[in-house]
Length: 500
Image (cartoon, rainbow, N blue to C red; front, side, top):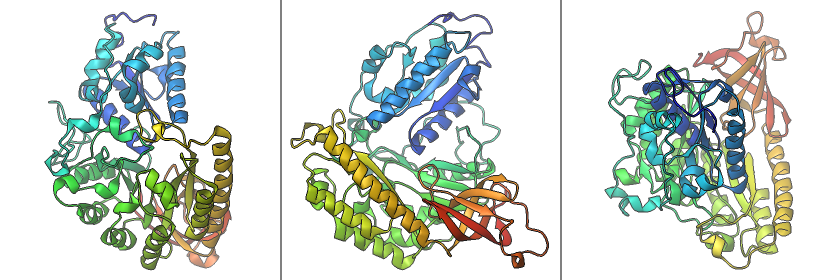
């Protein structure tokens, strides 16, 4: 790449600018903010846009083919910018980089470096070396599940290594330092519970490059929740590859049930949401805590993946239509208005028309608020990639359209059922007397949203003119209309909580 020689006061010197570009899931968002914290602590200045940076750090996604392509396209776009004066270097990190390492480096010479997760603790130094013209040897991928003991109880907590740097001015007043920097400043933020996964779903490659499941300690999570609250965050979304496994390596499989109320009690935090629940591991006690604890969103992100027990067994998963409906009945017995979302894979090897019909039967009965529909594709290194009875691309595409169309119709119907319901909406954007945010059954990024109107609310709700809405307010409103999965609601009263 032109202009890679380091010059006094140039890229790599104190105050040089780096732009962090994030692709993929909320777990990657946390990784990016932790990288940003390390970079800033190491003397780098964070740039809001790649065109304003000396180095562009692309945090890639390696989950499915579309995400891989998006990651590569983003690296190429950053490299195109580098043909001018800036940036001086483009570096790939994240899941795609970890998963393919040297192979990706050879196939993508536009990237000045492809770094591993192992480079994260010294990311500031790594980038300085790269802009000085030292291209590091790309790593050879390895199965990260084998880096820790097989028994979860023998694994250490996933406390990040924190270099010997001065305390950050925005860190918590006591307890573990939070080496993280917010990159978007919104009132909702993810908070990582754990990393890795011990399950062996036949279609999923994530455990091989994310590693075995390792929980963070409750003290570290609570310290980070307090830090986020100090940054203006009002809702924390607890994320991991499998949140229902939290605590098993700390000697307490029910630790999440005790942690959730503690996070909800952090001053400044209005709402807590937990994502990525494995249906086979959901416990009655966890359902009760999520469904009934004040400050915890009654929201269940359950990755059913299919409803045919035959297909699920081939996927190395468990359950089926009747078991899943029983789980949902238990949720709604405690919280009738609880939100439920899921993802399903269609076209898995060996899937028949009867299996597809069973999935349709389940979706029609489940009354879900959001459904992600994905067509099966082979993933390198997975069991499913070597299975027989593969379906052709046209059949898979047809089933994606069929199930996707049904899901779209059903979630719109579920939204219509909420007309007349009173919802609590955390406002993320405000335009005059109209706000937009999420009700408890709506997770950020992946679900619908709720528009809250002041001017059309009943006049009796106010002692005078309608109040001005503010970002960060938690308001109560009555649903009056729907637009697909999105809701329209009128402000119910003047009381707000958790104002920014």
